[in-house]
Image 1 (cartoon, rainbow, N blue to C red):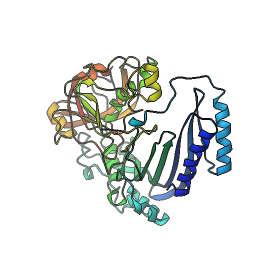
Image 2 (cartoon, rainbow, N blue to C red):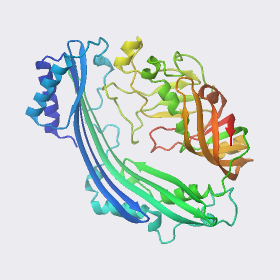
Image 3 (cartoon, one colour):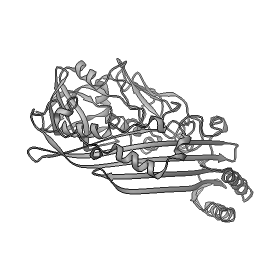
Image 4 (cartoon, rainbow, N blue to C red):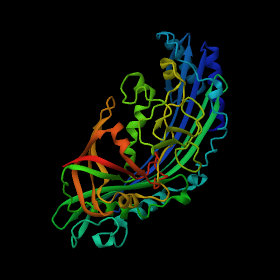
Length: 462
């Protein structure tokens, strides 16, 4: 973690930059450590440890601005670096919109970095032997009787041909744990800190059916606390997801109800967040230009930024400028409520500054209480369940999209057969008008809290 001596040195650097002629300065000191154990077919394949420490310095001088970084945190070297950086900034073109955020917008509550409750002191006591043990325990091939027959995975393998056993061909797992600490200070009195730990595991498996066809899939989990970390089902889930693809073939082209599983649903939300970013809007590279305050989506579509979800990785009290985060709607009942504009972009566009980006966006809709993807399939009756995206793209200027998908055809709310090599095409403004319902089964370990989603009248082609 960042030491008291490093904090004092960072404060001293702010004062030195001011003394050398900077009109304003912001410094971000970041330290991180990541330990990783990779396994291949139930055996240790790679062990790594990465430690990083860096100082990012934003300097404002004579109406000009520059951003610099250094990882040598030695007093004389830092002072020389800052002095030369200020001289460099004075050679840049003036930019009237470059300035620190208003002090009243900045965070005052992130005092020790532990306020969000996502730092686990137990991280410091995890040994290399513990990491190897946890990686091997999570490996499918590390189990005496790995899941290798569809009968062992009934909940996710419905719809494929009965009596089609498969074998596990390969398995690549990766356990990691990390500590992240950042301290931000500026010349206007800002001083805030954020600290978190994370324990992660992900695994990709390949299976082969009795016809020699191979199928692959992946699953992962993460938790900020060691006591909450549980990767015991990751391997089985990955195998189940791979087995669910056995016998997949394209369905007939046409318009279907579509249910998107929570594990991939953020793929349809990310373009919306990107289109609401002030950089995209200012450059005209957004299909949501001029959308603030307008109802462009269905009544049941609400997207809220919830950065204060204590105990969940990624929650944060401030952004990279030190601006305080808050729980606030992004899209509410179909109405666009805000853009994401930092101080600089807000000044260029003449709009009110907000944050640089969403911290913990959560999508909700009606009805949502207690619904998961299976319940949404029952609600829709017939359609296609999407469990994975395979390439594709979105035109951010128009909102037109085309994505490759795989999943399951479902009838009367039940999967009947797997599908792959299909495309969904359309426009995001139209797609979200066809939202039927959003579930409540988002994964708290994910960056974006997007549950399973159901849409009507989606164009599929095989």
